[in-house]
Image 1 (cartoon, one colour):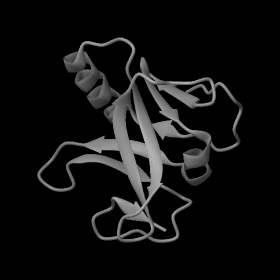
Image 2 (image 1 turned 180 degrees about the horizontal axis):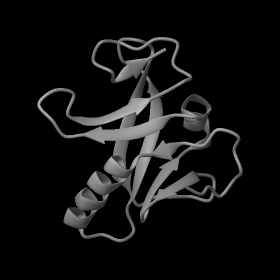
Image 3 (image 1 turned 90 degrees about the horizontal axis):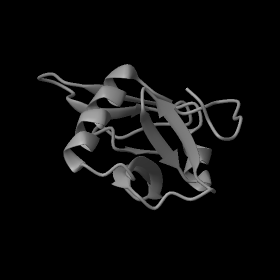
Image 4 (image 1 turned 90 degrees about the vertical axis):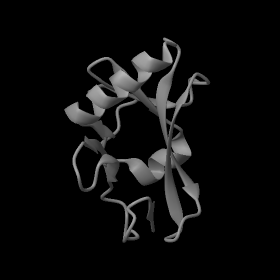
Length: 115
């Protein structure tokens, strides 16, 4: 895992999340896309996570790489995501992407919102 800026607590992408993102990116067939992870005001607990493929990556974005997958995070969102882990589970329960965030005081039952 590398970053363009040395941060004491990086954003981590698990192997499972990297593999899933890689397969989703392959379906998009656009080499310019990166996974953008952001935090926005809203949700039932105050902030919500947002993830989407983005080709509008700037020098101001922090970059985190794993196995050929690049996640980008704007600096304001990184204040809430430093030390967080992006994971992916494929099963009958709790399937999909999840973020384990040590900065979240508490999160809602859906896991998509935190404070």
